[in-house]
Image (tube, rainbow, N blue to C red):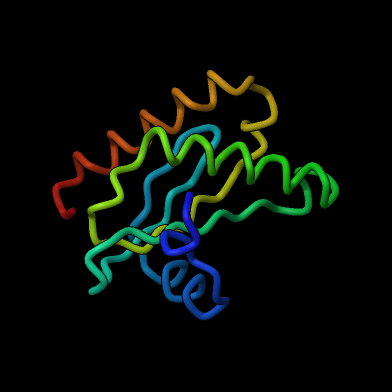
Length: 112
């Protein structure tokens, strides 16, 4: 995932997290809000409860690879993808299917 498609600033994360719109499943929570940029920006949040810094960075790298496969980069949204403890109980392919299901759920909401 290229840097132009990432949320990097703390204030951008806060704006998305303050929005009430979200979708969730056992592995992920997807918070989102519309933006005026004409492209998607995604931030990944991993709690300290899920492991030390090395493990959390590994999970973020895995999720970035999943996002490249699943998300359409043309929609105009800011999103924060939060990992849950359920992420640790599944392997990569199961988590990829969970993320695909979550994205399908997001697109069916009708407000994108």
